[in-house]
Image (cartoon, rainbow, N blue to C red; front, side, top):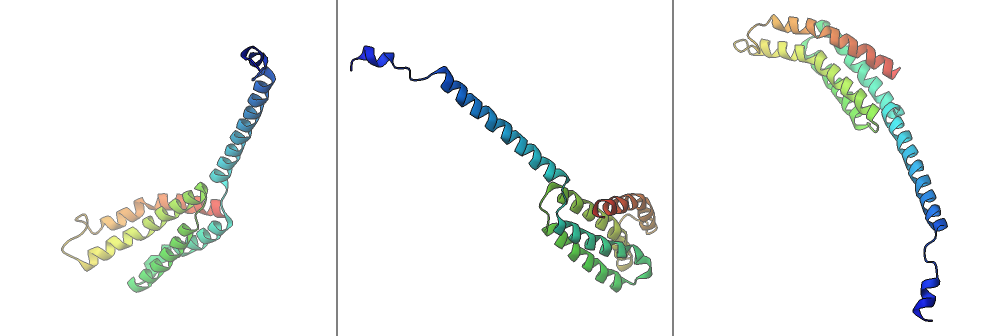
Length: 160
């Protein structure tokens, strides 16, 4: 076979190019659709294990709202229970939505316990208050109450 005969063979045709482009285009569309579905699931789906763990953590944090009726040891015990439930919820996060719920729980726990921790510090160390005025603890508690209420209602809406 000489070179002239080899050059007569068509190695690549228009139909082969169309087939490859069609398969590549179809695969790209399928991948984009799969990514869109995955993104929607990741963004809006709350896994059942996380929902249950977050509910129990929310109940424990809600019990801390009655801290005015508790003594220091009762509050510490309830705070430890709430922290354990929160840690369990945090360990069960899988989707982005789960992480949003855990972030809300974390902020709710911090806003609930920080005024009492500040007050405890002021009582245990009378000479060194956190910001110079022990009454500011009550002001902080009242100023964060609106945010706590909003977090409380949004977490209950998301988990119920």
